[in-house]
Length: 481
Image (cartoon, helix red, strand yellow):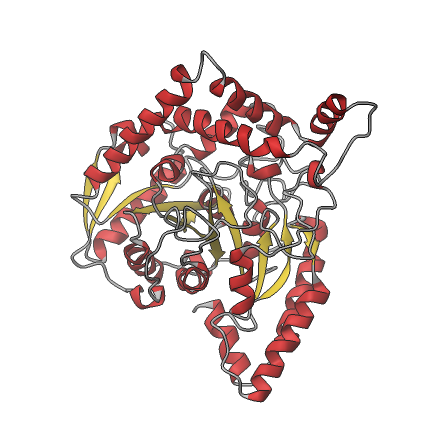
């Protein structure tokens, strides 16, 4: 059952108060933090104040918002007025935004309760949450392993029930990959469906905010609350937002599911392959027709992404110069202050991507790298467009393997980048994608299945995901922390 529905039934039935629910989550959160380190900041006072407001609304008979009384964790790259927002970087240490992001404002308007800000890879650059300047988040299923990234704190918090739901951001798989590693549901919406106003930018043409949850229905509820046009975001889409919970199904009769053949075969862990075979059989049993689809340009997604994303990051991160906000290294002249502030404020991975992006955009190399990458991006989009003429949803593994041990790939960035192999093309094409648990490997670590939808067809994604979830037990499994 949906965690949100269950909590709201308890609230409206007056079995529990919002304050009691919030305090219970805060207590569990604090108990598990020494082991997991999912949170960079816990906003207990704010959470309890918000909970009191919900209880007062219930007592007064005031109509409640769709997330009234529901605690939520927020990735630390979402600006929250009056609450420190660091992007897990030293260069933003102590930064307190003077404004609220559109998404967090919509959550507040819907009655949600803010538990705190979650750990992440610095400026969302990474696949393991090991690039945080402050702490290492552990995977609740095995604390020696990473939770994925860059939204590892948000994924771990939901997996360990430190929060019933959370928000992350996804630039190349940063919601779906940690969702797979932590055994939860993670949704990356269509580009432009959710406002990016107040999301600290990494790569502006790729970034998108989305939910983590234990069930598909919870993700549908949360997306309905945060999606919609925003005139503060020039890339925001003017589209009607449906009630996504009306698109939850228990069978797949009439649906055509395409298996992207380039994501199966060499390089796929044997346990992941077995879990995917079982998931395919289950989807067929639910009435769907499963066909093989080829997306020839899929294999070019990784190199394309690692030209475009660092190029945009190089531009976006130029603003962190020690002048306007964040840390400043005091020196005797302006140029030296710029250099020392950025040298001391940014971590190794952020510096690496800034240098790659600056090189790709430099005179003499722009045409050879950045322009070519944009052309390949168009080919990737065209492959997806052709595929969706034949099928309703595409299916791939979310990640080629399960979560790796902390420190295992920290000195091998290319190996780390391969963690996002299956997810990157979805961002390049601006499509929606969802990861949901589909089994465990022999070591007891979760395995994720990715479903990819056409532009603005989150409704179809929810139909397929909910039908699969209703027929399988994986979403009911929880780690013992």
